[in-house]
Amino acid sequence: MMLTTTSKGYNEARLGFQRRAQHRPAVIFAVTSAAEVEEAVRYAIDQDLPIAVQASGHGLIRPLDGGVLIATRAFNGVTVDAETRTAWVEAGATWREVIDATAPYGLAPLSGSAPGVGAIAYTLGGGLGLMARRFGYAADHVRRIEVVTPDGVRRNAEEDPDLFWALRGGGGNFGVVTRMEIELFEVSTLYGGSLYFDLAVHPRLPEIWRDWTRDVPEEVTSAIALVPMPDIPQVPAPLRGQHVGQVQLAILGDRGEELVKPLRAIGEALQDTVDDLPYQESGRVFAEPENPGSYTSGNVLLNDLKTLPDLAKARRHVVAIRHLGGALARHPEIPNAVGRREAAYSLTVLTPGGDTDPKVLDPWRESAIGRALNFTFAQLTDAEIADAYDDYERLVTLRRRYDPARRLQANHRL
Ligand SMILES: Cc1cc2nc3c(=O)[nH]c(=O)nc-3n(C[C@H](O)[C@H](O)[C@H](O)COP(=O)(O)OP(=O)(O)OC[C@H]3O[C@@H](n4cnc5c(N)ncnc54)[C@H](O)[C@@H]3O)c2cc1C
Image (cartoon, rainbow, N blue to C red):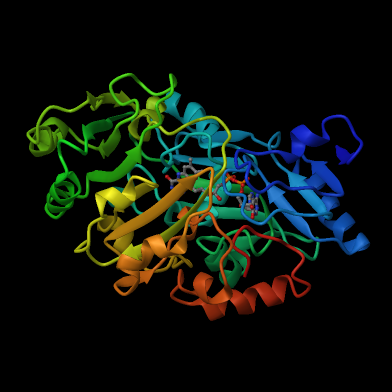
Protein backbone atom coordinates (compact mmCIF):
# COMPACT_ATOMS: atom_id res chain seq x y z
CA MET A 1 0.00 0.00 0.00
CA MET A 2 1.31 3.44 -0.96
CA LEU A 3 0.54 6.36 1.35
CA THR A 4 1.18 10.05 0.81
CA THR A 5 1.15 12.84 3.41
CA THR A 6 -2.62 13.31 3.05
CA SER A 7 -3.55 9.60 3.15
CA LYS A 8 -5.45 8.14 6.09
CA GLY A 9 -2.98 6.06 8.12
CA TYR A 10 0.07 8.12 7.07
CA ASN A 11 0.92 9.17 10.62
CA GLU A 12 0.41 5.73 12.08
CA ALA A 13 2.64 4.21 9.40
CA ARG A 14 5.50 6.68 9.85
CA LEU A 15 5.66 6.63 13.66
CA GLY A 16 7.73 4.03 15.47
CA PHE A 17 8.98 3.35 18.99
CA GLN A 18 11.59 6.13 19.00
CA ARG A 19 9.72 9.43 19.09
CA ARG A 20 12.65 11.85 19.32
CA ALA A 21 13.47 11.67 15.63
CA GLN A 22 10.48 11.11 13.37
CA HIS A 23 10.32 10.23 9.68
CA ARG A 24 8.38 12.69 7.50
CA PRO A 25 8.50 10.90 4.14
CA ALA A 26 6.86 12.09 0.94
CA VAL A 27 5.66 8.54 0.31
CA ILE A 28 5.27 5.46 2.50
CA PHE A 29 5.19 1.97 1.03
CA ALA A 30 3.55 -0.17 3.72
CA VAL A 31 4.80 -3.48 2.34
CA THR A 32 3.68 -7.06 2.90
CA SER A 33 5.92 -8.96 0.44
CA ALA A 34 9.33 -8.98 -1.24
CA ALA A 35 7.66 -7.99 -4.52
CA GLU A 36 6.28 -4.84 -2.85
CA VAL A 37 9.71 -4.02 -1.41
CA GLU A 38 11.14 -4.33 -4.92
CA GLU A 39 8.39 -2.06 -6.26
CA ALA A 40 9.15 0.56 -3.56
CA VAL A 41 12.89 0.54 -4.27
CA ARG A 42 12.29 0.85 -8.01
CA TYR A 43 9.89 3.76 -7.40
CA ALA A 44 12.58 5.55 -5.37
CA ILE A 45 15.13 4.96 -8.15
CA ASP A 46 12.74 6.27 -10.81
CA GLN A 47 11.91 9.38 -8.76
CA ASP A 48 15.52 9.75 -7.55
CA LEU A 49 14.45 9.77 -3.90
CA PRO A 50 16.24 8.59 -0.76
CA ILE A 51 14.98 5.45 1.01
CA ALA A 52 14.62 4.61 4.68
CA VAL A 53 13.33 1.35 6.16
CA GLN A 54 11.37 1.00 9.36
CA ALA A 55 10.16 -2.09 11.18
CA SER A 56 9.40 -1.24 14.83
CA GLY A 57 11.26 2.09 14.92
CA HIS A 58 13.36 1.19 18.01
CA GLY A 59 16.56 2.07 16.16
CA LEU A 60 15.53 5.25 14.37
CA ILE A 61 18.32 7.81 14.44
CA ARG A 62 18.35 9.49 11.04
CA PRO A 63 14.85 10.72 10.16
CA LEU A 64 13.81 10.95 6.56
CA ASP A 65 12.53 14.32 5.36
CA GLY A 66 10.76 13.65 2.06
CA GLY A 67 11.77 10.48 0.22
CA VAL A 68 10.42 6.95 0.45
CA LEU A 69 9.82 5.14 3.71
CA ILE A 70 9.48 1.37 3.40
CA ALA A 71 7.40 0.38 6.41
CA THR A 72 7.73 -3.35 6.99
CA ARG A 73 5.60 -3.78 10.13
CA ALA A 74 2.90 -5.85 8.40
CA PHE A 75 5.46 -8.00 6.51
CA ASN A 76 6.12 -10.08 9.59
CA GLY A 77 5.72 -13.80 8.95
CA VAL A 78 7.82 -16.40 10.76
CA THR A 79 8.14 -19.96 9.41
CA VAL A 80 9.76 -22.51 11.69
CA ASP A 81 11.47 -25.71 10.55
CA ALA A 82 11.73 -27.69 13.77
CA GLU A 83 13.77 -30.46 12.13
CA THR A 84 16.62 -28.22 10.97
CA ARG A 85 16.09 -25.90 13.98
CA THR A 86 15.83 -22.84 11.76
CA ALA A 87 13.25 -20.16 10.98
CA TRP A 88 12.64 -17.83 8.07
CA VAL A 89 11.89 -14.40 9.51
CA GLU A 90 10.33 -11.67 7.38
CA ALA A 91 11.42 -8.02 7.38
CA GLY A 92 8.98 -6.60 9.93
CA ALA A 93 8.85 -9.41 12.50
CA THR A 94 9.63 -8.47 16.08
CA TRP A 95 11.37 -10.84 18.45
CA ARG A 96 7.99 -11.26 20.20
CA GLU A 97 6.61 -12.78 16.99
CA VAL A 98 9.67 -14.98 16.45
CA ILE A 99 9.72 -16.22 20.05
CA ASP A 100 5.99 -17.02 19.98
CA ALA A 101 6.43 -19.00 16.74
CA THR A 102 9.44 -21.00 17.96
CA ALA A 103 8.44 -21.69 21.59
CA PRO A 104 5.88 -24.43 20.79
CA TYR A 105 8.80 -26.50 19.38
CA GLY A 106 10.96 -25.95 22.50
CA LEU A 107 13.21 -23.69 20.41
CA ALA A 108 14.40 -20.13 20.96
CA PRO A 109 16.11 -17.49 18.79
CA LEU A 110 19.05 -15.33 19.87
CA SER A 111 16.75 -12.47 20.84
CA GLY A 112 17.66 -9.55 23.05
CA SER A 113 16.39 -7.62 26.03
CA ALA A 114 13.20 -6.19 24.51
CA PRO A 115 10.80 -8.50 22.60
CA GLY A 116 9.34 -5.50 20.73
CA VAL A 117 12.60 -4.89 18.85
CA GLY A 118 12.68 -5.88 15.17
CA ALA A 119 14.53 -9.17 14.63
CA ILE A 120 16.07 -8.21 11.26
CA ALA A 121 17.67 -4.83 12.10
CA TYR A 122 18.87 -6.18 15.46
CA THR A 123 20.65 -9.00 13.63
CA LEU A 124 22.01 -6.73 10.86
CA GLY A 125 23.64 -4.74 13.68
CA GLY A 126 25.19 -7.87 15.24
CA GLY A 127 22.55 -8.63 17.84
CA LEU A 128 23.62 -9.03 21.45
CA GLY A 129 21.11 -11.32 23.10
CA LEU A 130 20.13 -12.94 26.36
CA MET A 131 22.22 -16.07 25.61
CA ALA A 132 25.04 -14.16 23.93
CA ARG A 133 27.98 -15.44 25.95
CA ARG A 134 26.93 -19.03 25.28
CA PHE A 135 26.03 -18.79 21.56
CA GLY A 136 27.56 -15.54 20.25
CA TYR A 137 25.98 -12.75 18.23
CA ALA A 138 22.68 -13.30 16.40
CA ALA A 139 24.56 -12.39 13.20
CA ASP A 140 26.81 -15.43 13.77
CA HIS A 141 23.81 -17.73 13.28
CA VAL A 142 22.26 -16.49 10.04
CA ARG A 143 22.09 -19.07 7.23
CA ARG A 144 20.59 -17.15 4.31
CA ILE A 145 19.47 -13.61 3.56
CA GLU A 146 17.13 -12.38 0.84
CA VAL A 147 17.57 -8.72 0.04
CA VAL A 148 16.54 -6.05 -2.46
CA THR A 149 19.71 -4.08 -3.13
CA PRO A 150 19.48 -0.32 -3.83
CA ASP A 151 19.65 -0.99 -7.58
CA GLY A 152 16.21 -2.61 -7.25
CA VAL A 153 17.43 -6.20 -7.71
CA ARG A 154 16.33 -9.12 -5.52
CA ARG A 155 19.31 -11.20 -4.45
CA ASN A 156 20.29 -14.13 -2.29
CA ALA A 157 23.04 -12.49 -0.27
CA GLU A 158 24.98 -15.69 0.38
CA GLU A 159 25.74 -15.90 -3.37
CA ASP A 160 28.03 -12.86 -2.93
CA PRO A 161 30.41 -13.63 -0.04
CA ASP A 162 31.15 -9.88 0.41
CA LEU A 163 27.47 -8.99 0.69
CA PHE A 164 26.76 -11.90 3.03
CA TRP A 165 29.73 -10.88 5.20
CA ALA A 166 28.63 -7.23 5.32
CA LEU A 167 24.93 -7.75 6.05
CA ARG A 168 25.78 -9.78 9.15
CA GLY A 169 26.98 -6.95 11.41
CA GLY A 170 27.29 -4.04 8.96
CA GLY A 171 23.72 -2.80 9.47
CA GLY A 172 21.09 -1.78 6.96
CA ASN A 173 23.48 -0.16 4.48
CA PHE A 174 23.43 -2.66 1.63
CA GLY A 175 19.79 -3.22 0.81
CA VAL A 176 16.35 -3.90 2.20
CA VAL A 177 16.35 -7.36 3.72
CA THR A 178 13.08 -9.09 2.92
CA ARG A 179 13.71 -12.25 4.92
CA MET A 180 16.43 -14.05 6.79
CA GLU A 181 16.95 -17.68 7.76
CA ILE A 182 18.20 -17.91 11.35
CA GLU A 183 19.30 -20.78 13.57
CA LEU A 184 17.28 -21.69 16.65
CA PHE A 185 18.42 -23.25 19.91
CA GLU A 186 16.94 -25.94 22.12
CA VAL A 187 16.07 -23.65 24.98
CA SER A 188 12.64 -23.36 26.55
CA THR A 189 13.55 -21.92 29.95
CA LEU A 190 16.13 -19.65 31.52
CA TYR A 191 17.00 -18.98 35.11
CA GLY A 192 16.52 -15.28 34.74
CA GLY A 193 15.20 -11.97 35.91
CA SER A 194 16.58 -8.98 37.79
CA LEU A 195 17.93 -8.24 41.25
CA TYR A 196 17.14 -4.62 42.10
CA PHE A 197 19.25 -2.98 44.80
CA ASP A 198 19.10 0.49 46.33
CA LEU A 199 22.40 2.10 45.29
CA ALA A 200 22.28 4.42 48.29
CA VAL A 201 22.50 1.32 50.50
CA HIS A 202 24.77 -0.73 48.18
CA PRO A 203 27.10 1.76 46.44
CA ARG A 204 29.63 -1.02 45.76
CA LEU A 205 27.13 -3.02 43.64
CA PRO A 206 28.75 -2.25 40.24
CA GLU A 207 32.14 -3.35 41.57
CA ILE A 208 30.72 -6.53 43.11
CA TRP A 209 28.92 -7.40 39.87
CA ARG A 210 32.07 -6.75 37.81
CA ASP A 211 34.17 -9.00 40.07
CA TRP A 212 31.50 -11.71 39.90
CA THR A 213 31.48 -11.63 36.08
CA ARG A 214 35.19 -12.45 35.99
CA ASP A 215 34.64 -16.12 36.91
CA VAL A 216 31.17 -16.96 35.61
CA PRO A 217 30.81 -19.66 32.91
CA GLU A 218 29.54 -18.93 29.39
CA GLU A 219 26.08 -20.14 30.42
CA VAL A 220 25.74 -16.83 32.29
CA THR A 221 24.91 -13.70 30.32
CA SER A 222 24.41 -10.70 32.57
CA ALA A 223 24.30 -6.93 32.70
CA ILE A 224 23.87 -4.15 35.19
CA ALA A 225 21.85 -0.98 34.77
CA LEU A 226 22.05 1.99 37.11
CA VAL A 227 18.60 3.50 36.79
CA PRO A 228 17.23 6.67 38.38
CA MET A 229 13.67 5.32 38.66
CA PRO A 230 11.03 7.98 38.17
CA ASP A 231 8.49 8.51 40.93
CA ILE A 232 5.46 7.49 38.86
CA PRO A 233 2.76 4.85 39.39
CA GLN A 234 3.99 2.73 36.44
CA VAL A 235 7.17 1.91 38.42
CA PRO A 236 6.72 -0.92 41.00
CA ALA A 237 6.32 0.58 44.49
CA PRO A 238 9.61 -0.66 46.03
CA LEU A 239 11.64 0.93 43.19
CA ARG A 240 9.76 4.19 42.73
CA GLY A 241 11.96 7.30 42.99
CA GLN A 242 15.06 5.29 43.97
CA HIS A 243 18.45 5.19 42.28
CA VAL A 244 18.39 1.49 41.51
CA GLY A 245 21.15 -0.94 40.56
CA GLN A 246 19.45 -3.60 38.43
CA VAL A 247 21.47 -6.76 37.85
CA GLN A 248 19.94 -8.49 34.81
CA LEU A 249 20.54 -12.22 34.62
CA ALA A 250 19.90 -14.90 31.98
CA ILE A 251 21.41 -18.26 32.89
CA LEU A 252 21.26 -21.53 30.97
CA GLY A 253 21.49 -24.97 32.57
CA ASP A 254 20.58 -26.06 36.08
CA ARG A 255 23.18 -24.22 38.19
CA GLY A 256 21.42 -20.86 38.11
CA GLU A 257 20.49 -20.60 41.75
CA GLU A 258 23.98 -21.55 42.91
CA LEU A 259 25.65 -19.10 40.50
CA VAL A 260 23.48 -16.20 41.68
CA LYS A 261 24.14 -16.88 45.38
CA PRO A 262 27.07 -14.40 45.69
CA LEU A 263 24.85 -11.64 44.31
CA ARG A 264 21.95 -12.46 46.63
CA ALA A 265 24.45 -12.40 49.51
CA ILE A 266 25.03 -8.67 48.92
CA GLY A 267 22.00 -7.96 51.08
CA GLU A 268 18.31 -7.42 50.84
CA ALA A 269 17.18 -6.57 47.33
CA LEU A 270 14.38 -4.04 46.75
CA GLN A 271 12.97 -6.63 44.36
CA ASP A 272 14.16 -10.07 43.21
CA THR A 273 12.48 -11.41 40.07
CA VAL A 274 15.11 -14.04 39.25
CA ASP A 275 13.53 -17.47 38.85
CA ASP A 276 12.90 -20.24 36.31
CA LEU A 277 11.45 -18.40 33.36
CA PRO A 278 9.83 -19.73 30.17
CA TYR A 279 11.81 -18.25 27.26
CA GLN A 280 8.53 -16.77 26.04
CA GLU A 281 8.63 -14.48 29.09
CA SER A 282 12.28 -13.52 28.60
CA GLY A 283 11.29 -9.85 28.32
CA ARG A 284 11.09 -9.99 32.14
CA VAL A 285 14.89 -10.30 32.43
CA PHE A 286 15.50 -6.64 31.58
CA ALA A 287 11.88 -5.53 32.10
CA GLU A 288 12.35 -2.53 29.81
CA PRO A 289 9.60 0.01 29.09
CA GLU A 290 7.29 -1.11 26.30
CA ASN A 291 5.75 2.24 25.38
CA PRO A 292 7.21 4.50 22.68
CA GLY A 293 9.60 7.08 24.06
CA SER A 294 12.36 9.49 23.28
CA TYR A 295 15.99 8.66 23.99
CA THR A 296 19.60 9.17 22.93
CA SER A 297 22.71 7.32 23.99
CA GLY A 298 26.45 6.86 23.61
CA ASN A 299 28.41 3.62 23.95
CA VAL A 300 31.94 2.38 24.48
CA LEU A 301 33.38 -1.13 24.30
CA LEU A 302 35.97 -1.93 26.94
CA ASN A 303 38.59 -4.58 27.58
CA ASP A 304 38.02 -4.31 31.30
CA LEU A 305 35.96 -2.28 33.70
CA LYS A 306 38.65 -0.69 35.85
CA THR A 307 36.77 2.61 35.93
CA LEU A 308 33.32 2.28 37.43
CA PRO A 309 30.55 4.86 37.01
CA ASP A 310 30.49 7.75 39.47
CA LEU A 311 27.14 7.15 41.16
CA ALA A 312 26.38 10.83 41.75
CA LYS A 313 26.86 11.63 38.06
CA ALA A 314 25.10 8.43 36.97
CA ARG A 315 21.92 9.67 38.64
CA ARG A 316 21.24 11.89 35.63
CA HIS A 317 21.28 8.98 33.13
CA VAL A 318 20.75 5.27 32.75
CA VAL A 319 24.17 3.59 32.73
CA ALA A 320 23.87 0.10 31.24
CA ILE A 321 26.82 -2.29 31.21
CA ARG A 322 26.71 -5.69 29.52
CA HIS A 323 29.18 -8.49 30.12
CA LEU A 324 30.62 -9.79 26.84
CA GLY A 325 33.25 -12.46 26.12
CA GLY A 326 32.61 -16.19 25.85
CA ALA A 327 31.21 -17.13 22.43
CA LEU A 328 31.03 -13.43 21.48
CA ALA A 329 34.81 -13.42 21.21
CA ARG A 330 34.86 -16.28 18.68
CA HIS A 331 34.43 -15.77 14.94
CA PRO A 332 31.69 -17.82 13.26
CA GLU A 333 32.60 -20.44 10.67
CA ILE A 334 31.61 -18.07 7.86
CA PRO A 335 33.14 -14.77 9.04
CA ASN A 336 30.97 -11.68 9.30
CA ALA A 337 31.37 -7.93 9.80
CA VAL A 338 30.80 -7.88 13.58
CA GLY A 339 33.81 -6.06 15.00
CA ARG A 340 35.62 -5.65 18.31
CA ARG A 341 35.04 -9.19 19.48
CA GLU A 342 37.81 -8.84 22.04
CA ALA A 343 35.69 -6.45 24.14
CA ALA A 344 34.82 -7.67 27.62
CA TYR A 345 32.14 -5.09 28.45
CA SER A 346 29.79 -2.77 26.58
CA LEU A 347 28.92 0.43 28.46
CA THR A 348 26.01 2.58 27.33
CA VAL A 349 24.88 5.88 28.77
CA LEU A 350 21.25 6.48 27.84
CA THR A 351 19.33 9.70 28.40
CA PRO A 352 15.56 9.28 28.28
CA GLY A 353 13.86 12.38 26.90
CA GLY A 354 16.98 14.45 26.37
CA ASP A 355 20.34 14.53 24.65
CA THR A 356 23.17 12.39 25.96
CA ASP A 357 26.17 14.60 26.59
CA PRO A 358 29.08 12.80 24.86
CA LYS A 359 31.28 13.99 27.75
CA VAL A 360 29.64 11.50 30.11
CA LEU A 361 31.72 8.81 28.40
CA ASP A 362 34.99 10.71 28.99
CA PRO A 363 36.14 8.54 31.93
CA TRP A 364 36.28 5.55 29.55
CA ARG A 365 37.36 7.20 26.29
CA GLU A 366 41.04 6.47 26.61
CA SER A 367 40.58 2.79 27.35
CA ALA A 368 37.70 2.30 24.85
CA ILE A 369 38.44 -0.21 22.08
CA GLY A 370 35.43 0.69 19.93
CA ARG A 371 31.69 1.12 20.16
CA ALA A 372 28.56 -0.98 19.67
CA LEU A 373 26.27 0.69 17.13
CA ASN A 374 23.17 -1.21 18.26
CA PHE A 375 23.46 0.64 21.58
CA THR A 376 24.27 4.06 20.12
CA PHE A 377 21.19 6.19 19.56
CA ALA A 378 22.86 9.28 18.09
CA GLN A 379 24.10 10.37 14.70
CA LEU A 380 27.80 9.59 14.46
CA THR A 381 30.63 10.87 12.28
CA ASP A 382 32.27 8.51 9.77
CA ALA A 383 35.27 8.13 12.09
CA GLU A 384 32.99 7.23 15.00
CA ILE A 385 31.18 4.62 12.90
CA ALA A 386 34.53 3.23 11.73
CA ASP A 387 35.38 2.71 15.39
CA ALA A 388 32.75 -0.04 15.59
CA TYR A 389 34.40 -2.24 12.98
CA ASP A 390 37.57 -4.22 12.36
CA ASP A 391 37.30 -3.73 8.59
CA TYR A 392 35.43 -0.49 7.96
CA GLU A 393 37.05 0.03 4.53
CA ARG A 394 35.67 -3.27 3.22
CA LEU A 395 32.18 -2.18 4.30
CA VAL A 396 32.47 1.22 2.65
CA THR A 397 33.79 -0.31 -0.58
CA LEU A 398 30.85 -2.66 -0.68
CA ARG A 399 28.34 0.10 0.10
CA ARG A 400 29.77 2.07 -2.84
CA ARG A 401 29.35 -0.97 -5.08
CA TYR A 402 25.73 -1.66 -4.15
CA ASP A 403 24.60 1.89 -3.40
CA PRO A 404 26.78 4.35 -5.32
CA ALA A 405 24.06 7.04 -5.08
CA ARG A 406 23.91 6.55 -1.28
CA ARG A 407 20.15 6.25 -1.63
CA LEU A 408 19.63 4.08 1.42
CA GLN A 409 19.55 6.05 4.67
CA ALA A 410 20.45 3.48 7.29
CA ASN A 411 20.32 4.45 10.97
CA HIS A 412 24.14 4.29 11.12
CA ARG A 413 24.97 5.31 7.60
CA LEU A 414 28.14 4.17 5.86
C1 LIG B 1 14.50 -0.90 24.29
C2 LIG B 1 15.59 -1.40 23.36
C3 LIG B 1 16.22 -2.60 23.65
C4 LIG B 1 17.24 -3.08 22.81
N1 LIG B 1 17.88 -4.25 23.13
C5 LIG B 1 18.87 -4.70 22.35
C6 LIG B 1 19.59 -5.90 22.67
O1 LIG B 1 19.31 -6.54 23.68
N2 LIG B 1 20.60 -6.29 21.85
C7 LIG B 1 20.92 -5.60 20.71
O2 LIG B 1 21.84 -6.02 19.98
N3 LIG B 1 20.26 -4.47 20.38
C8 LIG B 1 19.27 -4.02 21.17
N4 LIG B 1 18.62 -2.85 20.85
C9 LIG B 1 19.02 -2.14 19.62
C10 LIG B 1 18.23 -2.64 18.42
O3 LIG B 1 18.64 -3.95 18.07
C11 LIG B 1 18.50 -1.70 17.23
O4 LIG B 1 18.10 -0.39 17.59
C12 LIG B 1 17.75 -2.17 15.99
O5 LIG B 1 18.23 -1.44 14.88
C13 LIG B 1 16.27 -1.97 16.13
O6 LIG B 1 15.60 -2.56 15.06
P1 LIG B 1 14.04 -2.27 14.83
O7 LIG B 1 13.60 -2.98 13.66
O8 LIG B 1 13.35 -2.52 16.12
O9 LIG B 1 14.07 -0.69 14.62
P2 LIG B 1 13.86 0.18 13.29
O10 LIG B 1 14.04 1.58 13.79
O11 LIG B 1 12.61 -0.14 12.61
O12 LIG B 1 15.09 -0.20 12.39
C14 LIG B 1 16.37 0.28 12.69
C15 LIG B 1 17.16 0.52 11.42
O13 LIG B 1 17.46 -0.70 10.82
C16 LIG B 1 17.40 -0.60 9.42
N5 LIG B 1 16.43 -1.60 8.93
C17 LIG B 1 15.27 -1.98 9.50
N6 LIG B 1 14.70 -2.98 8.80
C18 LIG B 1 15.54 -3.24 7.77
C19 LIG B 1 15.52 -4.16 6.70
N7 LIG B 1 14.50 -5.03 6.53
N8 LIG B 1 16.53 -4.16 5.81
C20 LIG B 1 17.56 -3.29 5.94
N9 LIG B 1 17.63 -2.39 6.94
C21 LIG B 1 16.63 -2.36 7.85
C22 LIG B 1 17.04 0.82 9.09
O14 LIG B 1 18.24 1.53 8.85
C23 LIG B 1 16.44 1.34 10.37
O15 LIG B 1 16.67 2.71 10.58
C24 LIG B 1 17.61 -2.35 21.66
C25 LIG B 1 16.96 -1.14 21.38
C26 LIG B 1 15.98 -0.65 22.21
C27 LIG B 1 15.33 0.67 21.91
